[in-house]
Structures are given as C-alpha cells and as structure tokens.
Amino acid sequence: MRLEDVTIALRPRLPWEAVDLGCAMVRRDLGRVLALWCSTVFPVWALIIVLLPNDPTWASLIMWWLKPLYDRVPLYHLSRRAFGVEPKFGETLKQWPKLWFTNFLPALLWRRLSFIRSFAMPAQMLEGLRGSAVRKRVKTLAVDGGGSGMMVTYAFLKLEIVLLIGLLFTTYGFLPESWEPDWSALFEAPDAVGLDRTPFVWWYVSCYMLAMTVVEPFYVGAGFGLYLNCRTRIEGWDVELAFRKLAARLTTPVMALLAFGFLFTSTVMAEDVSKVTEEVLKSPDFEVHKVKTWEFVPDKIDLGEAPKGDFSAIAAIGQILFWGVIIAAVVALIVYLVKNLQVFAFRAKDEVQFEAPKVVMGMQITRESLPDDILAAAMAAWDAGNAREALSLLYRGSLSWLVTQRRVPIRDSDTEEDCLSHVARHAQQPEAAFFHQLTGAWIQTAYATLPVTRDEVMHLCARWPFAGKGGAA
Image (cartoon, rainbow, N blue to C red; front, side, top):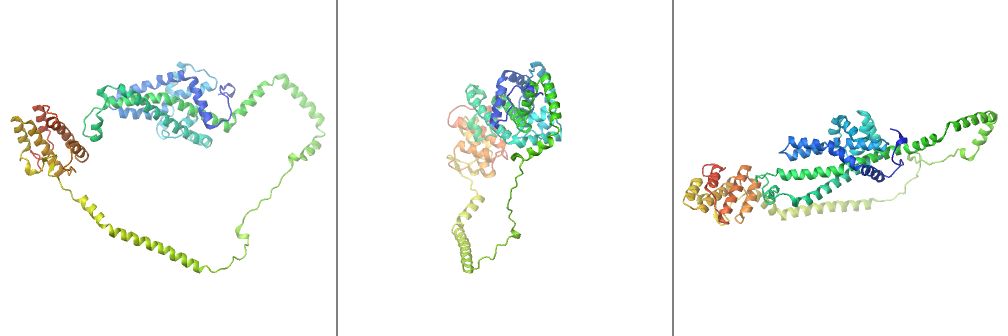
C-alpha cells in the first residue's frame, strides 16, 4: 500500500461524508462488485438450497449467518482499487478461498454479532493482524469511528428491511395460488392446520437473498469509507501525502545547491550563533506566560460561624405534614380494598369454577343426550342414509368430551368457527387436528348440503382420538 497511488482525495471528513465516499467507490465499480458477489455467494446459496430443500427457514438462517464471509471479496476489490491497483476478475476469484477461510471462525462466532462489523472488517482483514493485536487495533480505531460504525449498521439494516418488504409486496401478486397458505386457518389454528408452506417460505427467502445482494456491497463500502477516514484523521495520511509530494518535486541539483548553501552559511554564522539565539529567545514568541488559578480547599477555609436561629417549630410542622400524608394514604388504601373485596373474591371464584354448557348451537352435548357407543350409532345412521345425523353424533360427542375432560371454554352461543378456535388453543394437537377435519365435514354436510363419502366418515371414526370406544366423558 503506497499513499502516492491512492485514487481518492485523502482529507478528514465528517462521518457521513466518509460513508458517501465508500458508497461512491461501490457505484464506481458496481458491475465488477456484483459480478464478484454472484460468482462467490450464489454457488454457496445454491449448495445450501440443495442440502436443505425442505427446510427454507434453516437455509435462510444459515445464509444470514454467513454474511461476514460474503463481504470479504468485495472489500478486497475496493481496497485494491482505492490504492491504484486494477485487480482482474480472475485474479480476485483466485483469492476467494483464501479470503473466506482466513480467520473465518472468529468472524462467524464471537465477532458475528458485532455492531461495527463493516468498520472493523478492514482492520481485521487488510492489516494482517492476529489475535489480541486485532482487538487492540479495532479498539483504537473505534475511539474515533466506532459510533459512526454502529449507526451505519443500523441504517443499512433498516434499508435491507425496507427493500425486503418492498420486494414482498411487489411480487406477492405473481405467486401461484397453490403457494399461498390459508391465512384465516393459520391465524385461528396454526398448529392444527396441515398445510405445506414450504414454497411460500422459499419465495420469502428468495426476496431476502435479492435484498441482501443489493444492500450488502454498499454496506461494505460504507464501512471501508469510515475506516479510511478514521486512519486519515488519526495517522494524518493527508499531511503525510502532502509532504511526500513536496519531497518528490525536489530534484537532485536543487538538493545539492541547498547543501552547498547550508555549508557556506554555517561557517559564516558560527561566530554569531550565541548572539542570534539570545535575541530570538528575547522575542515575545518565546515569552513564558504564567497563569494563577484558585483551588477550593474546604478543610482550610474558615467560613465563620453560621447564623443561629430556632427552626424547631418549622421542623415539627414538616414532620406532622409528612406523617399525615402517609397515614391518609394507608387509610385510603384500606378503605378501597374493603369496598372492592367482593370483586377480588368473584375473580378468584370464577377462575376456579368452570361450568360446561349443555347446549351449543342448539345441539345437546350432555352425556345423557348421546348414545353409549357414539361411533356405532354414527355408522348405523350413515348406513340408514342419514349423513347429517351421523356427523352430528360425531360432532356432539367430540364437543361433549372436550368441554368436560379438556375444559375447553366453549359457550352455548359459540359458532363452529369459535369452537374450532377454542379447541386449537386449549386441546392437544392430535385432538385439534381431528376436530378441524370433523368441523369441515360437519359444515359441508349441515350447511352446504355437499355429499361426504363413506371413506371420509370411516376415516373420521378410525382417527377418533377421545378416550373410550364411544368417546364419552
């Protein structure tokens, strides 16, 4: 790295000017940066998808966790371009394995959740430091730019979320109907509905990958711009570069002439050195200024005697007022509790007692209103050609067992949808799944007058999850 070859204007900048500089560097080579990103990141994503085709949630989590590795190739390209090197595409790709596997464990473990990741990554990757030296270096740089690095992470996180939401809303209308889940059923009984949501989740993961591809290179550039600005401010790169350019202008003859003049003048002025020195030291520029300051030392200052007075009456009044307020508050609290005691007693009683309804939607669900063997009675009604009666027996028997054994808080005014929601929240998962299927068959027969096949009724009887052959309480 040579400061003389730098391709950007080195000067101390405000933090957001440095961020804009880094983003401008990415825009300058956006095509090359995106090509490197697609060549190094997309194959890894494809491998993850092949290994986890049925687990899009885990696949997206792994893709997100590997973010620090994705940033290294774009940072390598931007750093070389900043210092006058034109890296070829093939040469950069050859560095890909080395860049990813150098210190990848710290990057994916204890440094993964760092809030200054893009700001600290150049120091960790470009300066060739290891172990404690990296921590000390990052700590030194963070004194000047750590706060700005955190704000960059926060800002680009929001940009990524906004872009993701925009992509989701833009592409949702193009999804096939088979990919869309039943939203109402998911909200009412998310554990009981057996839907394949894998294609829908993969669509979400695809939008997230696209949002990351657009935002992450600029996040890397913003952190690199902050890093360059921090080193310029701390190490004076701009001053050093100015002196180097000045030194380069001095040719060899000029240096020889200056050396000859220095030797000649040194011999002439040797005798008057002491006089000139004394005159210079007497000038106002070398005057020693003294400043007197006052220091407060309580132990040594005599403030005299404090004025005397009798404040006992004021203190007594203050104590009376204080304790009066305390006593009034306690009395008010006791009175409130006494007046509202029945409210607390009613709530406690209501929590302990539960009264199962006898009628739901006009149907008797008491044990006395049901046959001893509900399944046999349902099959007999089906064989007699009464499909509604068969499904009614199954539905009433299920409600009877759920309200008496599972204590599901079903009320007599609840509808089928209300009962389904209560069962999904309070019953066990197999019972909720069976009741959801039974409710669909019951609604289809009772209201829609659509035929239900014998196989469906036999399947419901075979899956009967309640205790006893007849499912009675």
